[in-house]
Image 1 (cartoon, helix red, strand yellow):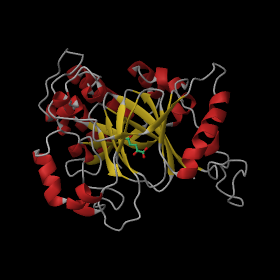
Image 2 (cartoon, rainbow, N blue to C red):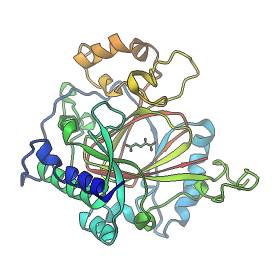
Image 3 (cartoon, rainbow, N blue to C red):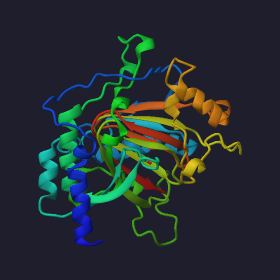
Image 4 (cartoon, helix red, strand yellow):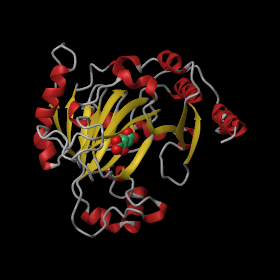
Length: 348
Ligand SMILES: O=C(O)CCC(=O)C(=O)O
């Protein structure tokens, strides 16, 4: 790409708010205009386990995590380990934009972003821009909308007919998601990678990894960074490898469906221009108490098998410091509730 193109893309992002006719505002705080009905009653919670690191660093976390995950890995069931990455430096350091700016001050690191906030959607466009430009965008977004979203569906003080997710009220034209980038080298010392994911980093040898590991071959395939303002979405999709999704900043809501052997295709993967591992259906349409909502009616008409045959939906909210194990091939849909930064590792 020529330097002229790079400059063009940078300018495009810097002017993103002008494109959206958004005025900058000094109002930093909670955004409370809710637009949707939402109910937790249709969900099954993902299993969870609380891990309290004993203060000796990560040595105990590695062992405890592997021991605890083992039965979930064996049965290929998801689980949230609360607090597993709480001690990773990222969980504190990454909340400060100054930290990010300093980390990249001397570099011209480029990242890929989804303009439109949800990769794969018709409105979104993936472009490369300098990470420093992206940080400017995040600051502008927070000046306008605040950092924190309000997930009222799990607040027992909110009446059930008013349970909503305010992140939805951010127009997609204002969302830019830095999704699925290799974690830049500058940030590698800030994160924790479970030992069992990287026993055999050579990707060579006899293919058996460390036979003492009961959590796969110990082959780490990638370390990805996901960062964006509240409202950003990864659409319903599955990945071929086992996954640890680690939440460092803000909260995310994850909806999960187990893989089914049925050939019904309840997920309509690959339809309507989607990739073959991605569904065109937004499973959030099931949130509301309103069974006649327009969105639900549309899904009933367009994707009837989804309502008839999809397996029960599982849900969890990831808080900073949490780790979610997503077994290979499980369908997942992820929405950032707040400004969020996560790292995931895929391993075999
Ligand atoms: O955090 C996200 O937006 C998506 C993460 C994801 O899809 C994954 O870890 O496989």
